[in-house]
Image (cartoon, rainbow over all chains, first blue to last red; front, side):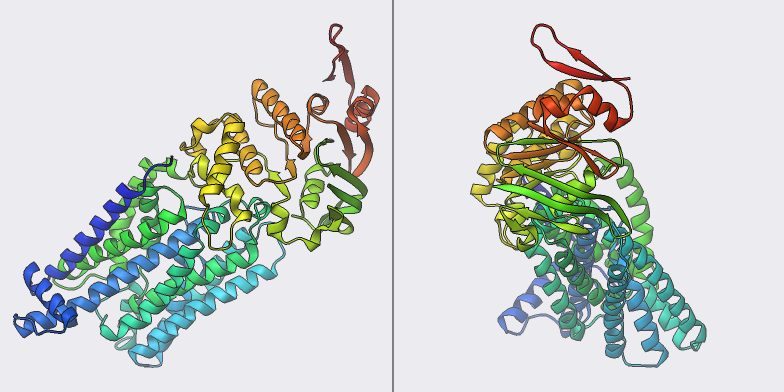
Length: 337
Length: 255
């Protein structure tokens, strides 16, 4: 009856596979496809691979963790963006609409300011994102209004601005030679520092949040209707909104803590996924996750290979994302109008 | 079974819209809610649906207070057809109708095969099964109204409440929706709808409820309540009454 999701899902999967191949093979130390497969296979079966240790360490220690982190962060941001766009019934919404990124940013620059270790900075960023969204939610719910969604978005904007001022203050006070560059680098987003120990704290929250959202997929369809309509269809919109916001914030905060602030992925990828498989969340969420992973893999490979120095991810996603989004606006209006 | 509002004071936290309102609707009956803009029609509708808490009085559903029902239980008894709107995302017509099955499933479930069968039957009843795979955003206003009706029917409710179901429709589709409302009452549903056109109340409703500035002006069978005098009092405007000599049918013209 409805159009099949298979072609769209196949395209998304193709993008992910292309992204994986690209990310593993391209780089300052070229590795052949055969070597990669040998190393990965050996790792999985527990045998020793018949390739040089340099190749092994590039695949397993250098590129492997970064590839996995890029795929996870891309998937997480895309899933969170998809959830928020549905919840706020607005296709211009991105995962940081409720202040997750600005909260994480303040947490991270504070951590850098106090010269904490990498793990502590990530923890600060993660908690900062969660606390910011919780604060926005509590303030937004305390305001009695007929349109809770609108109040929530406005509160997010206002609190985000305040947190931005906080980030500005910390940067202003920071040591301009040691701390400020680290802060700037963090705020622009990068996966250069991703290593094996990052993967579990990233994977846990992302997997949990994504599973919750996928489980709620049908309710999320109904939640994208006007508030009163959703309630008259039997959906307890209040508790469900808390659950969706919490799950999406968990995935966003975990990825921001690992990779810094990476804009555009959570805005652009949901649109692309929607144009591939339509707006039903049952298909949209998995497609967005796969596509987001592939998209960020391609971008991250560009980031580390396009120039002599690594280009911050936040800059590349904007450079790629802006023209892409304009093209999308011009050609795909029908998917949301 | 019936929905009953007793001694209702209705409104929003910052504003009272109406008071002293008693209203009742039984299954198999069509009630039309008429009145000027800002008179409290939509507020009363939302209060009866449980979307808005009454400031005083209480709404009872099947003899029990509406508050005793969970949101899900309520949705299996009362369906709401909002004014036709354009949705943000291009869900297919089938998906929109399937959303009516939400209250019959659990928190994590998707529509089952049986849900699809119910949705399909609802689409067929309104003659729009051919639209099933079309995006809801790309069909006409009249078709959208029928889709929302089909969604309400898919809820398998006892009552269907419609907010200005004819407001954005062309002449032919207005007639079609009136006929469908009659048919819903015939199949045992209680139907409540608001309208700006007394003729629609005459066509489709058994009873009319006249609401002006939050106060009930009249409530009774359409033939007695909808008179020239009552309508002039309701709208503070002159009204002309026409009678068809052949059929005896009555219509009103404003001005």
